[in-house]
Image 1 (cartoon, rainbow, N blue to C red):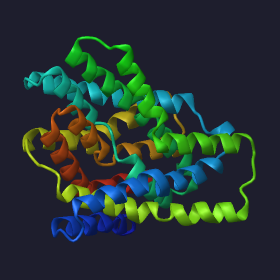
Image 2: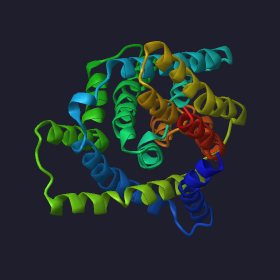
Image 3: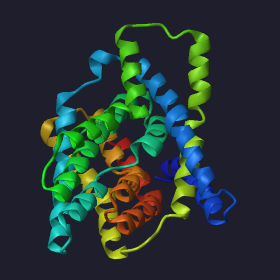
Image 4: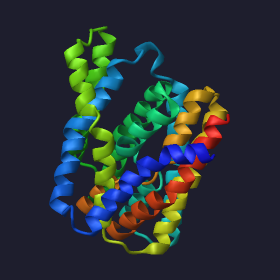
Length: 308
């Protein structure tokens, strides 16, 4: 357990450094925004392309894995939605809280950390979780909030949701990498070195950006935020672990799925909440609380996974 904690500590220390830099205003909000764009469009995309381009395509997609992750995540979504509605939240707010309770920081934190801690065998499962989150759940929350506001889902809403998926650089880079792998194209040494060099900036850049962005986020509605943090860090990994067991998912991919589900709330959930002007403060507080608490909970989950 101590060894796992020490392995994860540098990742969270980088988040803490970014938080301190943002809080002390050494790293202003504009700098955080531009660093995030660099990581999102360039460094992380290079890392994802390189990882996807070296995968065994035939062994990548596992229907049982996808069904188990979707089933467990939807169960948590439903629980968070019902709890929010019982508390009197409007439909759009309840949907955003449900989204907050089961969308983890797989892109900026999970990909770099879990691949290092769990090895190359974690690449495929992590990318599958990231893809399902972005394609299924990000589209779902957009459609639900639009329906709640306008009473219907129009062609414009569907087009905007589809455009958001197609234009996402993480999706584009993964699809391009998988196509590269499917065609068995070689990766010339200079190209591989370029991808490695650029992708190496993804981990420190992403973690620092997470911390710096947390320092300036509005915090409010602490009660719901604590509940949502607990749902994300405890209920979500427990739910996908149970569905993976029921579906007979292999131990290795199932462990990666649980580890990915144990990650704190993703920062892009706040971007959605801010865009739709829905539950901004409670989402922001849940991101801050879950990230802080995950310093303890993530090593516990990974320790349990590595012990079988």
